[in-house]
Length: 377
Image (cartoon, rainbow, N blue to C red; front, side):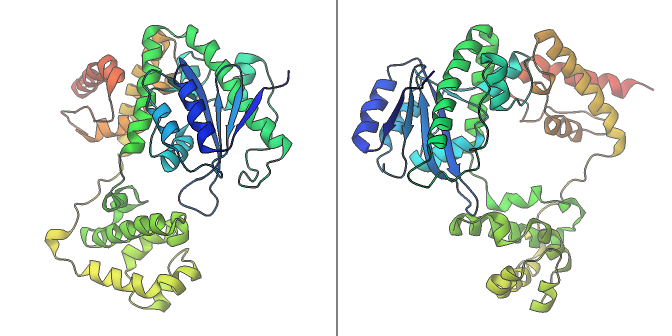
């Protein structure tokens, strides 16, 4: 069956269509973008499906995005997406807005126990019995004109995404539908939270092995790398490679020869930013003790794995009762944060990352299970 495709290539047309879409109960939303040598994604195409047609919006010929921002923010129109984290970045960069309410079909499939983290093609095959063509995801979406294959691929995505939503939505109980939207809101909230460059060092590999005097250097290196990646619009590893950060903070080179010998150090980095990096390291290393960050906690010891296994089993039993994919219940990072709050002897505190319905359903049971584990001889 031929897909009814409508191109939107100017500001006025986008404004008219967005006004029409705001009368609908939902729209399916997808993006195609390029992100090879940049920090930020570059939008190549925005696709909207209304359940009948595919609309292809050309971001290379439109510069007035307020109507799309208004649609994204309209609480009366559900925005349907699939595995949308990068799509959200594209939309935020383009329009300054993020979609609410957000219905992610990948999450919906997990709440219906069809599978966890299902790819789009597999979900379309499972729900609609349609086999999607492969091969265009990595093509050049900034070229003009787009090939017929690219146009067909993009249009199919928008049409089938709307069809998947109309199939999945009625199968979800009121609770599960609310949970899908709650998780969607959490995805949006996470993207709205500005990452503080001075907090990035906490996530650096092996940071826990560094002394406070070395951590102050790592903190400055990570903060500078984060700021420069955004300012230059380059991937972080083009500024300083990930594997170079820890040895830089550990050995604190004071000349270009020593800098060049750092593990995984790219010659381009030494050439472009070497002198600055040496000065940054020297300045950070001379910071007074009262400016040193606290030590980064060590990973949980091997003995804690039994507790994680115990809590995960609790989550799996609850998932089975609810008929949802067990991976949805309790994220590993959440369980680790919970155990770190009181290991080995307690008392334990629920981490902030355990929110919403999961906290209501599981919070007390998790604390009770840890208390019982502590009482065992």
